[in-house]
Image (cartoon, rainbow over the protein chains, first blue to last red):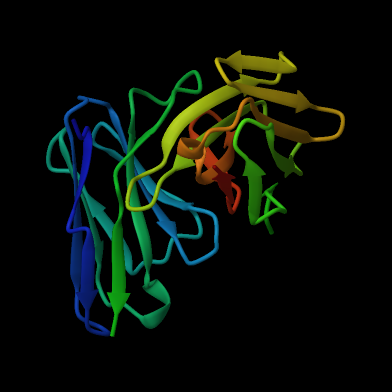
Length: 114
Length: 111
């Protein structure tokens, strides 16, 4: 049973055309994360929500935004995708931010920018 | 600047033998480490973790060793099985929640 679900699995978007990636979870976890993984690179944290509190990593471009309308859903919005934003985007959840809790990952959305 | 490094992009091992996957880190403040396994078309799944107060943690066929002085950890899989073929990511936790991942090692277990 999938616990962290990402949609779509594959997304093709045009250069400069806004795109939204979606993540939902059935674990009722407080924390949701978005990671970006470019080809042959390590996954890199973009931001996270602890409940409704949004936390941006310092080096996350302004082009990337996120919304969390409720506990179960989190969206990644890319306002003007560039060719360099083509990557796998991974959503993850964890119960909380304390005590080194394990994170659960979705299958990822592979974004192609044309 | 990679703080967590997996210098071997790939590894092939015969079924039944030991697989050893290595990971090095640069930040001596890291005190919790995890290994994740990723099959194609699936998300990474948690495998095993270790706190810096330990130098070994074992879970069935999987053992993680931590050498703090060398800033090195390794994952041992004994015996290796074809179903273990996957990409293995090492991760350190910065602060309390931020995962710093390595680039992964692709393990292929040959039947």
